[in-house]
Length: 114
Image 1 (tube, helix red, strand yellow):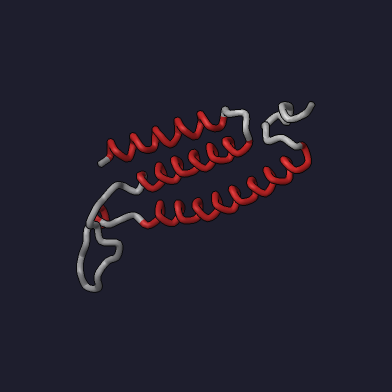
Image 2 (tube, rainbow, N blue to C red):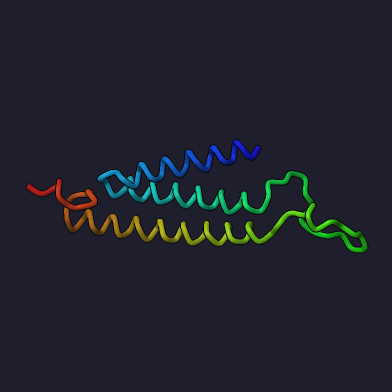
C-alpha cells in the first residue's frame, strides 16, 4: 500500500512539474493543480496509512493512541483542498482576462502577436 501511494505521489509530482514547464498558461494551471494534489496526498500519508482504524475513542474503553487514526493530517488536507480550489478558480479568471487582453495564452505573451 505504501509503495502504491509513493508511486502515485511521484507520478503526480513529475506530471505537475512537466506541465509547469509548458508554454501555455492553461497547462501551467493544470500543473499547479497536480502538484497541489501530490502535496495533499503526501500530507495525508504522513498521518500513517491505516485501514480499519478507529477514528474516535469509545467511552469507558482504554485504547492505544498509536492504533488510532490521526485527525490532524486529514484536517490539513481538507483545508488545502479548499484553498487550492479557490486559487485555481482565481488563476482561471486571470487566465481568461489575460487572454482577452493579449490575444494569446502563452506564458510570456509572445506567440500570438503579428
